[in-house]
Amino acid sequence: MEECKDSKCPFHGSLAVRGQTITGVVVRDKMQNSVIVQKEYARYVPKYKRYMKVRSRIPAHNPPCIKAKTGDKVELSECRKLSKTKAFVVTKKL
Image 1 (cartoon, helix red, strand yellow):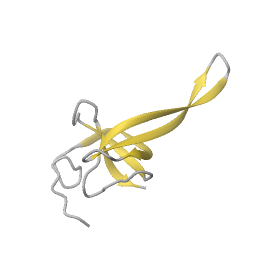
Image 2 (tube, rainbow, N blue to C red):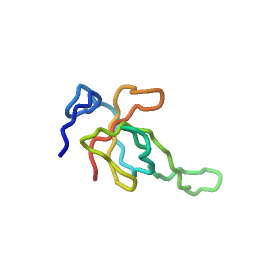
Image 3 (tube, helix red, strand yellow):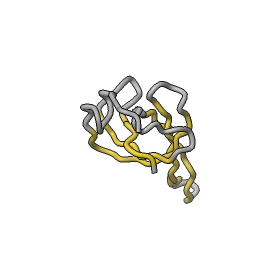
Image 4 (tube, helix red, strand yellow):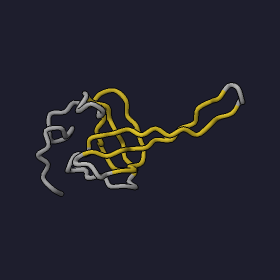
């Protein structure tokens, strides 16, 4: 396992995690230390009295010690805002 010197790593740095925990699949890993995680869930539509499938894409910090790739199922934890869009960090691969 590679040594992690990332200050934004919840295990080897000083980043505190709190709040939501989300599971999803990594759909994009082309950025440096960031991934896009997609989560699918069902939303009720009262007019039709049925559920529809909805997807949401969440940008998250990907520490070098975890290195999640496209297709990996991961767990995200909420943390402080790391950039304009990132407020989650990858905590483990499932």
